[in-house]
Structures are given as C-alpha cells and as structure tokens.
Amino acid sequence: LNQTQPQTSLGLFNADASSSAVRVALQHAKRFIAIVDRHRLSWSRLWCCWEMFCASQLQIESFVWLSHVLDPAEAQEDLNELETAKAHASDAVEEQMLLDFISESVGSEAMDNIVRQFIGDRLRFYRQALSSEDAAA
Image (cartoon, rainbow, N blue to C red):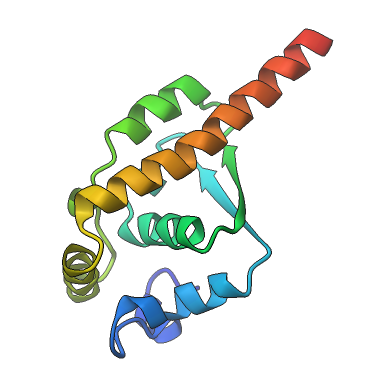
C-alpha cells in the first residue's frame, strides 16, 4: 500500500467502500496483524481504523503487536478514546469520502465500538500472554 498516494493502490470509491481494494485484499487474508507504535497512531489514522473494522467484520484471525515501549494498559486506555470521526487520512478528499461512507453505512459510533471490542479482545490476549511469560520466568 502506497501510504503517500493510497488512491493509486486502493481503488476505494468505485461504488462504495465495501468493495475497496483494502476489503478485497482482506477477504483473501488468512491473518491480520494490527501493529501499534508507541504513539498509538493506528487509533488516529482513518485507513487503519477502516482496516481493523474490515478485519473484524470478515472474522479474520487477528493479532495486536505493540511497540516494545508501549504498556498494554496504556494502549487499552487510548483505544477507549478512539473516535473514527476524528481520525485522518493523508488525502483530505479521500478522508471525507471514507468518513461519509462510514457515516452512511455503519455509523461512526458503531464502527468505534466494533473496533474497540475487536482490538480490545486482542489486547487482553496480549496482556495474558505477557503475564504468562512473566509467571513462567
């Protein structure tokens, strides 16, 4: 995916976002990994939110990978503040088109709740895996 010119590789808005290249690619994916950096930019990037939403709707086996300096509890706190309506894309026109599609289809609040639940479940699994490692050490 070309992050600086996503429209060249996404082909998002031919009719609606449900047939976007992102969603089509995810339909063929066996696994989805949400990589969360120490600044938790995934929560503020509209395309990342859309990818997480699509992965949840397609029920793809998914994992969260946190930056080594990120506390899982902090990630969960920030995830609770996720607001798709305030997320951004690098292209303003594409951002507005995707926000409009989300608003008209699932709704921003519903999408936020779905993404929070989806990623939150994976964060809980991640925390449990870490505590199991600590107990074994």
